[in-house]
Amino acid sequence: MTTRPTGPRGTVRIDQQLCRGTGLCQAMSPALFRLTGAGHAVPVEGELRDDSAVELARSVAECCPMGAVTVEPDHDEDTGARTPVPRER
Image (cartoon, rainbow, N blue to C red; front, side, top):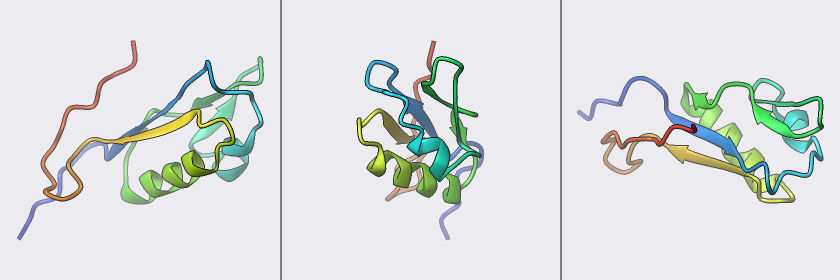
């Protein structure tokens, strides 16, 4: 039996250079994304805590017209081995 990793399941990021503030990400998932006062999207929380949040974030990333949203798993999806997720600075 394979033990699933605990902790965050992935990280969502938004490239502010690409984001044009269409609001699609927030409309698709207000639990994961919000718009700043300047109209740009930011993650509510960068760490995705469960598989459903990872899948939802991936759906949003696929729909982003600017390609600004990315999702990085924190583990190898085939083996379940944890891999480091770089933290934004």
